[in-house]
Length: 289
Ligand code: TA6
Image 1 (cartoon, rainbow, N blue to C red):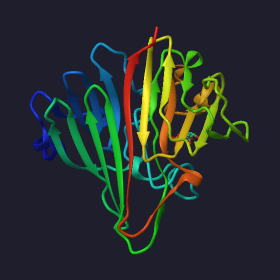
Image 2: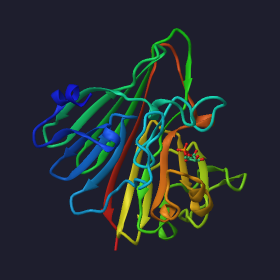
Image 3: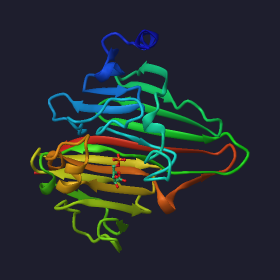
């Protein structure tokens, strides 16, 4: 498997290596950053600027097995979000080995990788990862069928934070929130969202940039997006963490999921031949004073 991928290596920029459980992994180095992507799920498992703390959280208990999702980094949720009777939660994209289409060293120093989801005939799904000072993720879906095609998608990103109970999430004010833990809906007020217990929220018609302000690590993580009308915020907190076999009991303290996608009432309906692009750009900056 790995030998067939070696043709995509770019000396000094991109190497194909044997990752955990022998799964093929892509290791990328640019002048500003490093990143790692598994072919399994086209799953970005690491992004870090040189001299900075990891931007993405990875569970130390994550499985690296076919048929199982990697716990952490950027799981790709497609073509449905959440549970579905008799099918894997969050769809099959994150459980599938994607075809590696292309690797490219861009003028200016970025490195770009393109994957394609082995096609089911109904849709063509291409995922493009660009690594530079920022991490840019683009999920492109095209309807190949003769009927409308409805799907949900989400970049279910796990971010590394110094202490979850000290961060503030900015940029959700005014968005309508479906709080799955409290079983209630409300409009988010002007104050930053704090994480002090299990949090599982879907913000609908939520299109703005989210800033994860992290005083412990002295930085803000900026999550900028386009082609996304839903923002999901999740932290399992202690009880759910204990129940999750592939997640450490205390790991909830160092992570927050801020997910960008189109879920629930924001699901996408593509006409025949139609295309949708979900784009997320992730970048860090020092805390403003
Ligand atoms: O992030 C929202 C969510 O749907 C939560 O309800 C929780 O289930 C989480 O995804 C993780 O799901 P997973 O299937 O990866 O364990």
